[in-house]
Length: 72
Image (cartoon, rainbow, N blue to C red):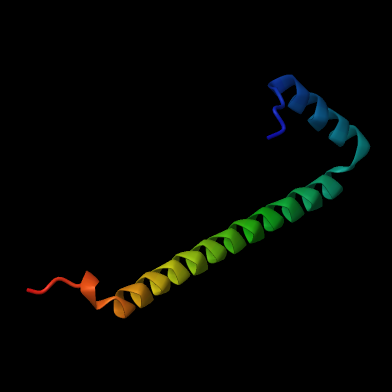
């Protein structure tokens, strides 16, 4: 992580307000929000694919190894 304290964030916000107008800052914030949402969605899809792959692999191992099944 960046390890920024409260005062560092305040200085960054003040500098950003001085350098850019409000419309530009809103567009940047919107862009960052969309990028964050896309990143989270992609990570979620990758995790679900990995978990499905792991489940498929375990099912294939159980089908290949009949000794792992318990007789009733």
